[in-house]
Structures are given as C-alpha cells and as structure tokens.
Length: 118
Image 1 (spheres, rainbow, N blue to C red):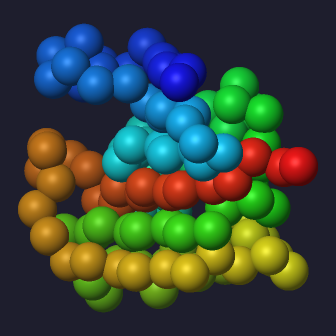
Image 2 (cartoon, helix red, strand yellow):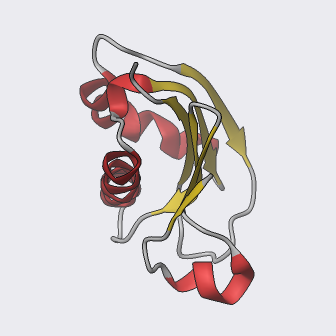
C-alpha cells in the first residue's frame, strides 16, 4: 500500500492523505480547489487530482469512477465543458451529489477512483 500526500490544509487537520494505492486501484480523496468561481475551483481540484494520479503511476484516462459534490446542483452545468475536456474519450462512471462541503467558500469537491495501467 502506498499513501500519497499533497500537503493540503485539511490533510493534517483531519488526518487523511490525498490518495491511497492498493490492489491495483488508486483511491483519491475528495478534493476541493481554489478560486472564486465553480469553474476555477473545478479546474484547480482536477489539477490536484492529476498530480496525485501521476505520483501513483496513472492518469485521467484510467479513472473508472468519479463523484462530484456541490452545495448547489445548479452550479454543476458550468463545469461540464471542463469535465468533458478532462475525460474526453475515456469518461468514467459518475455521480453528482448536492450536499454541504467543509467550508462555505467551496463550490465543488471531486473524488475519483482509478486503476493502475497494466
């Protein structure tokens, strides 16, 4: 098992790591991004996730499951072009949940599971 840390503020406060690699899978924790808009936060979260995936030895093309969590479901549509560009021809199974996040300033949190390439 390998644990990957990104140095994020909440990792130390709460006691978790950005990702865990085990059994051929990479489980990336729910990740929020920085910025003022949902689009900026979405892209920022994806950048953090991409770094964790690279460190684990995989990429966006190997994501099999993604969960999007947003305080306002209506904000999700603004992220669609970013997500479509990110996943392109290799879309994962996906779920979107409307829920509260750890801080009201966050507009989206993204969690993914990827496989390690063979």
